[in-house]
Image (cartoon, rainbow, N blue to C red):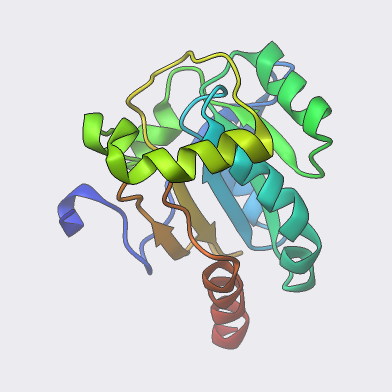
Length: 186
C-alpha cells in the first residue's frame, strides 16, 4: 500500500467523531489528550478475528496501561450489538461505534477482497479464532478490514498497522514500542 493510500507514523491523527454504545458523540482527540491511545478498528462484530482481538486486548490491557496507554475498540455498529460485545466479553476499555464509517475513512482503514477476507491464508487462523472467541452474526460491511493505530498525547500517530489480511494484527511488543517511543520523544 503506498503512502498516498495510508497514514504513516509521524502524521497528525485525523480529528473525528464517533459514538458511545448509547449513541453519544465522542471526539477521538479528547481520548488521546490525556494519554496515548491504541485505536483498534474492527471489521464487523461477527468477525471471529476481531472478537479474538478484543479478547487479546483485554488480556493485554494491564500491560498497555503500564506503558501509559489506553484502548478504544471501534466498530461500525449497531450500538446495541457493540454494547452486548463489551458486556459479554467484560472488556475493560470502551467500545465505540462509527455507523457511517467516517473514522474508518479518515484513518484510511482499507477494504479487502476475497483473498484478504477469506482466502486460504486465513483458514487455519480463522478456525483457531472461532475456537478461542466464537463467531458473532456477520453484518455491517463484510469487506471492511481492521486497522490498528497508536496516537500520542500530541495527536501524532506512533503506530500504523495496515493488515495484509483479516487475521493480521500487530504484536503486543509493537504496540508497547509505539507507546514507549512517545515517552522517549517527550
